[in-house]
Amino acid sequence: GESVGLHLPTLSVQEGDNSIINCAYSNSASDYFIWYKQESGKGPQFIIDIRSNMDKRQGQRVTVLLNKTVKHLSLQIAATQPGDSAVYFCAERGYRGSTLGRLYFGRGTQLTVWP
Amino acid sequence: DSGVTQTPKHLITATGQRVTLRCSPRSGDLSVYWYQQSLDQGLQFLIQYYNGEERAKGNILERFSAQQFPDLHSELNLSSLELGDSALYFCASSVDTESEKLFFGSGTQLSVL
Image (cartoon, rainbow over all chains, first blue to last red; front, side):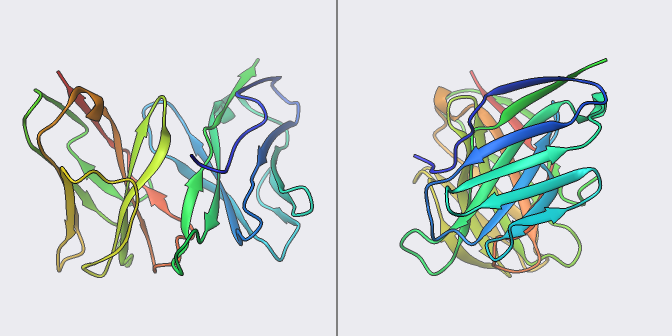
C-alpha cells in the first residue's frame, strides 16, 4: 500500500480559524512533497510544494511544514474560509526500486468549514 | 482551470466493453500521467508518458493500455471492463519527467454496469 497517510480523516473548523492538516510518511528517501485540494466533482488542485532540503514554505494563506526527523508534513491554512472546504491530499515523491520518482498520494482529509 | 482537458466527463458502459478516455495536457507540458481514484484505494498511479514514450508504470492492469500521440494528447484504453473498474480516472500533466507540480484535469467518471 501507499506509505503516505493522514492522521485524521475529517477536520471541522469555524470560518476565520486556522486549520492544520497533518500527514505522515514512511519513506525517508522521499525528496519532494506536495499538497492538493480536491473539491467535489473536480480534479486535485495544486496548493503548495516543498523539497526535502527545506522545512517550511509559505504561500498565500497556506504554509507547509516538513519535519524529516519524524517524517511528518503539515498544511496550515490561515483564516479558513468556506471555500476551503474540500478534501486535502498530501503526496510524496518516492523512488521505490526506480531512478524515476513518482508521486504517492495519501488517502485525504475532508476539511469542513462552518460559518 | 488547470489547463488539462479530459473527455468525456462521464461514461456509462457495460461489463465486457471497451472504452477510451482522452486527455489533452497543459500547453507546454510534455509528461502525461494517468491516475485512478476510487473510494477504497485513493489516487492510484497507472502510467506516465513523456513526449510520446512510456516512462513509468504503476498499478495498471493488463486490460488497460495507454498512448501519447505526437501532438502530446493521450488516450487511456480500458477493455474487458469489470464492475470493479468503476472509478474516477484523472489525467495530469507536467513540464518534465520529475513528477513535480502535476496539474490535474477534471476527470472522467466511469461507471460499469
